[in-house]
Image (cartoon, rainbow, N blue to C red):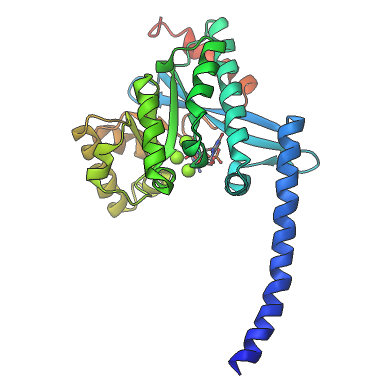
Amino acid sequence: KAKDEGRYNYQFYTKDMTDLAYKRLTLENNLRSAIRDGEFKLYYQAQTDMRSNELVGVECLIRWHKEHEGIIPPDVFIGLAEETGLIVQIDRWVLQEALSQYQQWMKEGLKIGVISVNLSAVQLTQRDFIEFVEKAIKRYDIAPENLMFEVTETAIMRSPEQALDILNKLKELKFGLALDDFGTGLSSLSYLKKLPVDKIKIDRAFIKDIPEDKEDMNLTKTIIAMARNLNLDIIAEGVETQEQIEFLTNNGCYEAQGYYYHKPSSAKDMHPMLLEKSTDAARS
Ligand code: C2E
Ligand code: MG
Ligand code: MG
Ligand code: MG
C-alpha cells in the first residue's frame, strides 16, 4: 500500500517539481538579463534621529523594474539570486551604484550621513570582496567611515569562520558594520560580543505591534539595554507611529528607519528632502 502511495506521490510531486524547476529557471534567466540590461534600480530610505529629526544616514534598497511587470521587491528575488550565486554580482552592482550616488550627492553639497548597503551571506564567503570594496571607495573617493555594511546574524551563521574573517577585515579598514534584522536570528549574547559590529538594527517584527504587544515592548527594552551595555549603536526598523517613537526614545533608542519618516524612494524623489535637510541651520 505504502508503495502505491509512494508511486502516486512520486508522480504527483514530479509534475509539481517540474513546474517549480521551470519557474526557477525562468526567474534565473530573467535575473541574468536584468543585470545585463540594467533593470535594477536603487531606492534609498532615510535614517532619522528621532530627537532632532535630523537625517543620520540612508539605506540602499534594491528594486527590479521589470518590463511589463512593474517594480519587483527584493524579497521575491534575493533568495533565488543567493542560491544561484547571482547575488554576488547584484550586490556589487548595488555597491557601485550606491557609491556613485553618494559621490553625486557630495558634489551637490548634500549631507546625507552614512550610506548603508546590505550584504548577502554569499558575499561573506567571497575572498576578493575586500579588494573589490577598496577599489570602489577609491574610485568614488569615499571615506570608509561613511560606508556601512548591513549583515544578518543568519547570513553570518551560514559560514561563520569565513564571514567573521571578512567582517574583521572590513572593521580594520574602518568600514561601519550593522547587524540587520536583530532579534530574529538565534545567536546568543556571548556570540554577539564576538562580532565586530558597531550597530544593531532592531527588526521591524518587534516594533510593529508597539504599543499593543507588551511582550514585544519588553523584548525591545531588553535589546536596547543590552546594546547600550555592549556600547553598540542602535536603530529601530519599521517605525510607523508617534507612539512607537515615544516608546523608543523613552527607552534609549534614538534612531529610526521607517515609513513614519520616509518610505524608500528613488534618488530623484528623495532630492527635495535632502535639499531641505542639508540646508538645515542645525547641520551646517
Ligand atoms: P532590510 O535590509 O531589513 O530592509 C528593511 C526593509 O524594511 C525594506 O524592505 C524596507 O522597505 C522595509 N521597511 C522600512 N521601513 C518600513 C516600515 O515602516 N514599514 C514597513 N512595512 N516596512 C518598512 P525591502 O526594500 O522590501 O527589502 C527587503 C529585504 O531585502 C531587506 O531587508 C534586505 O534584507 C533585502 N535587500 C534589499 N536590498 C538588498 C540588496 O541590495 N542586497 C541584498 N543582498 N539584499 C537586499
Ligand atoms: Mg538592511
Ligand atoms: Mg532589516
Ligand atoms: Mg529584512
